[in-house]
Image (tube, rainbow, N blue to C red):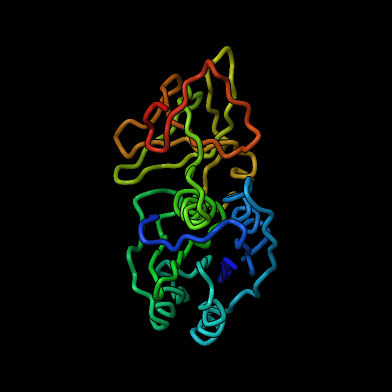
Length: 251
């Protein structure tokens, strides 16, 4: 049985591959993240989920919870991986044998993302802010789960769209902007969902896509062509509109 242990504290290479029929979540950090994990392989399996108790922000509580997850095939945590006074998850994981592969990613939201392995088990330390956790999940965890499930299509479909809003960029970080995607006469359009703070869950709830704003000066102006990852599985694609592969190449 493929087990995902997830804990709420406030690359595909080398991942173990398991057949889809053995895929199950045994714990989920909250309802939103349970939905995210299920969506990673929604076409193959109906995955049951239960809730693992939230760990207190102490070394002892975190160590106890994380030890419960060590038998799983993949471990996800939420929160506690940044640089706050009570962000102990990374340190406790290392005490339990984590070999850290990377910490912090040049993206927003979702910069304080940690990834490593305990033995052969992948461990993802997602940020604590809900939108940051969701965007990080989409970019890193979802493809990993699908890879481990034996899927060949790992990434969200990406389309070229016309931006309707101005979006500022930040040098050194790729910006994943929550947006609503529409189609008119064979052309896709992307409209932001409003304020883009990493704690504004409504901005993600309303989104049907993630607009990818490069880390180059100038940002995006209305009328610019952008790449958008489609989040809505029921989105109706137009054969007349262009779409791209995961890295932006035309498919």
